[in-house]
Length: 91
Image 1: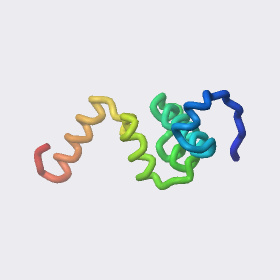
Image 2: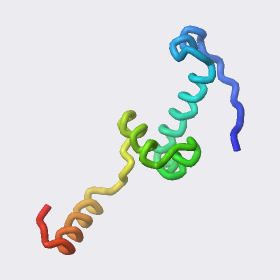
Image 3: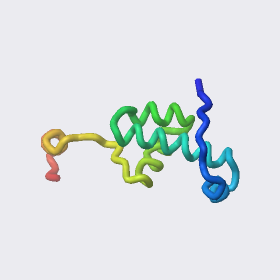
Image 4: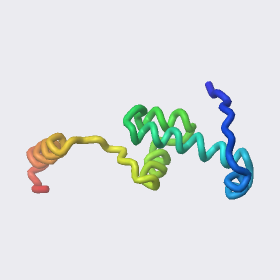
């Protein structure tokens, strides 16, 4: 389900995007990107809301410098240890 929200934006800004619909699509996408950045939305849910594949959402997040893997340093170190033990290879 979608909802329409009215936002006043200077005409110059709209003109940069070319059309109001292009700007609306970009703003909706940026809102979702920001929610992922704030960890209020998962990547999976974000891709679902945008109607795009998971990998495409990851590309969008990457372009906006939003991490889509959210491990603490300790968790990442443990993952590396587990992987090394499973494979016998050093990281």
